[in-house]
Image 1: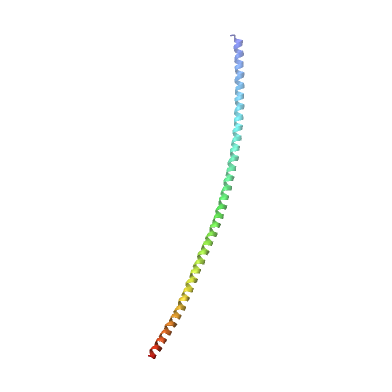
Image 2: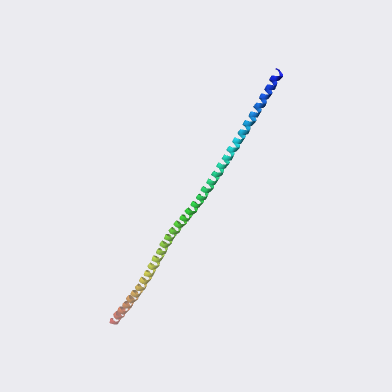
Length: 125
């Protein structure tokens, strides 16, 4: 090989090195751009997820409120039924007491009649 060929080969090698470096730089730039785009996409996804989380928390609060309202209504119905039963029991007790008093009055009247009849029978003898 002569020096000229060797020099020519060296120049070609340098050119190839330059081209490779340029291509490598271009690839690095492209990768950086893609990375930036991916980071932006990731940020957008993060914001969307945060928004959805807020929506879910709001929905959870609404559902809790609805459930609380339903439970309060059910409790109110149950308490009204229990109160109604208690009032009915008290009314029945009052009626029973009145009947007892009436029976005692009737019983006393019957005893008085029995004593009078007994006295009259005793007087006849």
